[in-house]
Length: 114
Image (cartoon, rainbow, N blue to C red):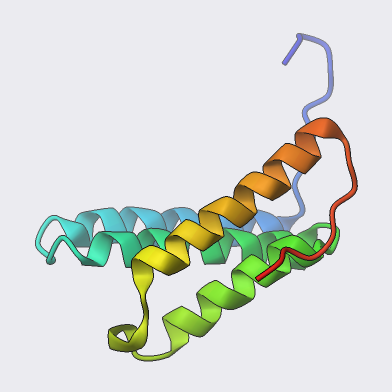
């Protein structure tokens, strides 16, 4: 940031939610030191879900991101034994790539397929 320019402000609720997200990520990292390696991907997916939840709460609605978040929530709220985590993550990554590509190109984007 250039000197003399005002620093952007963040809404207090958003700041609190970002602090909570950081706390979740740090506690997850700490927990993974003693947890089975298979927990890592699920914790990362839940961190992504929480970040997308913040965007939905504080940003412009984005149907493609809501679709990704909903799929992650469905997986995280049920029995993880019933979740094909590799497939879920592969699909979520492909959908996020579509969103990022569209945003970089300045193109509008709609709901992610799937």
